[in-house]
Amino acid sequence: MQHPIICTSSYLRTTKATAGVAQEITRALEQLGIEHMELQNTNDYWCRDYMPVQLFEDGTYSRYTYRPDYLWDDEKKRPYITNQSEACKGLDLSTPTNMGIIFDGGNYVRCNDKVIMTDKIFMENPQWSAEDLLRHLHQALCAEVVIIPWDMRDPCGHADGMVAPLDDGRLLLNNYVQDKQNEAFYKRLHKILDAHFDVVDLSFDCKLESDSWCYLNFLNLPNALLLPALSKNFDCANDKEAIRVMQCLFPGKQIIPIYAKPLIKDDGALHCITWEYIPNQQQIMPTN
Image (cartoon, rainbow, N blue to C red; front, side, top):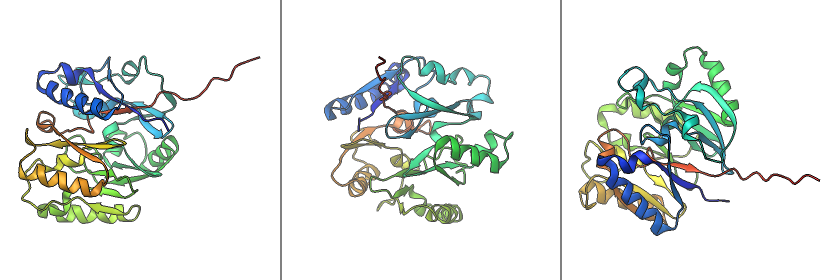
């Protein structure tokens, strides 16, 4: 199986606040021998949100309409909406399907043969009944769709800040178990997810900072895990504990912390600003 090319938007490198993050990611990928590239024709660096979603490991993707309300509803923010077709120019992508709905790649987490997304998808597509939308998503994504409640503390309504797949097929749930103020929400999440997955709670043996949610927003690579960090030297109590926990969850992989505070302050981290690109592998048969 071909390993994906890790992509970031050119905005990540050219934006002053995030240039250092881009440099550290590039350095880590080069040390790991992982191919990487920059996406052009983009309007911000959150490329996970507007690039097509991967359906199969062979590099089959699905397109959609990227018009998130957190940008569209504010005319001043509309220029930040990237046109998906423009961003895909020059890429040899296999995209046989187009969902034809308003969608956001950050609200797409694939675990085995299932896809997890928050119920914000219903609000974004009111022209569909819930039953019809779920049926359409099942057909377009070639997967069972598991809907979880939107964590309203995240204005984007993304699932990739809530859950992430582990290499062994289990599902990692962010550290809601330690959030005593939202115990009812945590129990509701577990009840839904337990019916479909073997769920592992992310938990840390230290007093948590408010931004500790960021550790779930990692970039999982074939031979390493790029882990967002809160301190520049990766030496705060939360960073050290997160490195320890991730080493247990991803045995045999190198855990590489990346200082990501410039991203975290805007409610994102390393998964949000990366996208996996597998060029179209279909071979054109010669004609006689």
